[in-house]
Length: 272
Image 1 (cartoon, rainbow, N blue to C red):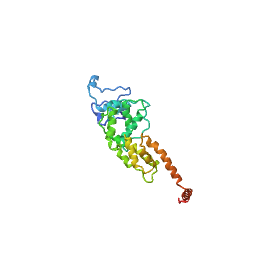
Image 2 (cartoon, helix red, strand yellow):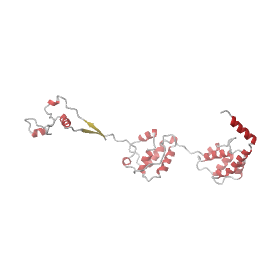
Image 3 (cartoon, one colour):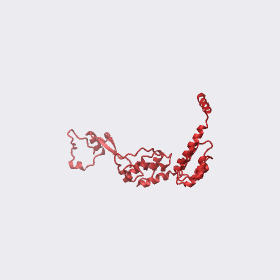
Image 4 (cartoon, helix red, strand yellow):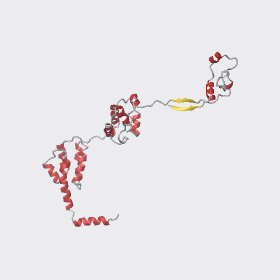
């Protein structure tokens, strides 16, 4: 509610002469009766509306009018709006969702942080709302009032509505495109291939070894996995280490002292 002071205006001049108008109270604060009118008759008469305001104004009384704010429009059910979150509950740092990323990823990161707190379903709803911004907040506010009664509903609506931004997992066929380039070192390639594997869930290890063998350039590591395929996925990072060190050792020895000095001189005297 909003408090607003109201000072009624004085009655118009013509009202002062009307029959039913009563003047303000006298010095003793008691209304003076018109002569010839009985007390009972005065009580039965309906006074002019301006009489009330004039009496209040003459007595130095301020009238306060209460303007009632319109009811709040929220997708949350009334019982969710009414419940207050425990004092001191604060969600660990989480960037606001603005439709630029995967909604499911945002929801998963929110749950990972909210699960650290001792909160109920209502708090989950209210805290997730605080991580929305921009058009996402506008979408949330346009949901039908009172329709969200549980976090399960909200966690379903949120990623479903913004599914166009969802990042779907890649299939194993994507790994066939991760081919070692002509001038790409084994270290760089293994790093790039391993990163691509993380985007393909539940890939078969036998298929993974076959794809990597096919995509590698001819070399010792390719011969190694051809003769002895990978037994576990962890070998994807462990076994290449030996061949990476060999490759880098051979590469460093292939640079003769004269070539190294020439390279250093070119770097020293190159124009800036």
